[in-house]
Length: 118
Image 1 (cartoon, one colour):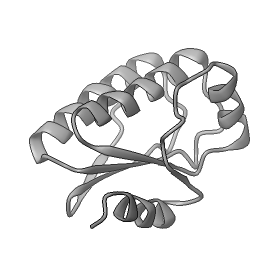
Image 2: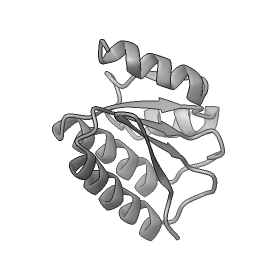
Image 3: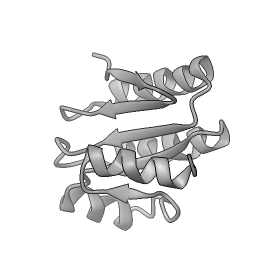
């Protein structure tokens, strides 16, 4: 299974609609980084509204995706983080201190647009 990555202008939009396993998470990481390189995108919105729980490995991959995207010049905004996911990310010490968040995809796009000063 692959997580769809949509291109909208200079941004990539990802809406994770199901719980993901380790293999899907790694595939998502590779797919996203390849799309950032391919399109030269400046921003990414990852919507987690449908994700109710994450395990330690998925949380680590998510943190890694944010850092890797940043290294490639793409700002990431996380949207729709459920309370249990937020608790897991904090409990595991996933480094998301400077990562903008928003309640929904629309607000995430607005925040990304504002972050990039476009």
